[in-house]
Image (cartoon, rainbow, N blue to C red; front, side, top):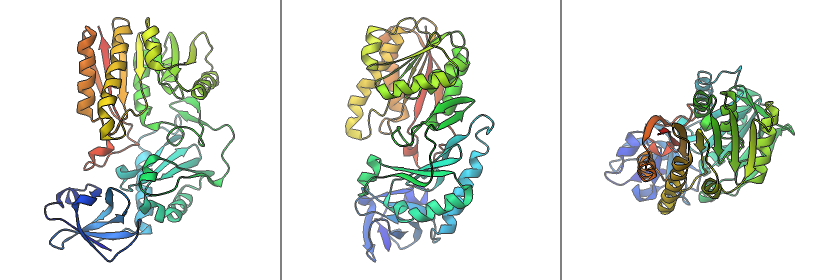
Length: 389
């Protein structure tokens, strides 16, 4: 299948951007169905690269190679090998046994996510092109890593937009009943069948370590705590006390188990189920370190205005409640809210708080979540660390 682009619409592809939207396509020759490989050509007929096609998605083509070099099973195996080699420079295996192995566009395999959990794997196949080579992916991962188990969590909204049915379950091996991973020396229970993302948020690993540096003797509040990983890092950094808040009762129960796994008692660490916004309005005083790590507020551009109000509200509450000289870690994982807008929102909250606010760090995802330089859409996680005077 050959896909020709409209005149003047080839520059992003030449620069390495992996997405081609339907509006950039001039014509398609050779027919084909979603997931089929395709060759992409400019308006003059010059070959730009190879990718895969999807008639049902707004993104008509996801690019896999540049020039007239097709994507083969050997290419797939080579990119998985390179992704694994890169991770060996990122984590200390003596302290961390789990991380992201393949990060979709960031590892030049758009639509494929693979997370390593101890000696097992959890994968997400999010696009029709990766669905087409699903067995080759599983075969390559098995040959390279010999995992004790492979679990699939292809159950996201992105997959539905591709016209694909959800898929999940254990593909190979047996998942431990009580799966516990290690991250920077901390033991964490993980639910691969029903947990968020593939079961855990590896993207915040480096930012959690930064919390340790600020936590000594501070009273810490972990908002939207999920597994309690920020809270546990605060405790590892010598926090005087920690409270974790999440709206999910199962998540709060999991936090309690993680506190116990790591030897912390209720006098040191507690967890509660509550709406964070309401809880902060009614409580929240007396903390010296607050972490705000909410779920996605805006998946689409139409949700940005509402998300901006939510981000401003939660940051303003934290700034008003925190003790003088306190530290706020604040994050957004909303892809539709870029770094510039997020900073503007937090600035507006700082202005309304009536307090002096110092910006200490600008944060992003851990390096096992690399971003293709030509694909800024991959920079979904952004964070700020502030001192509130």
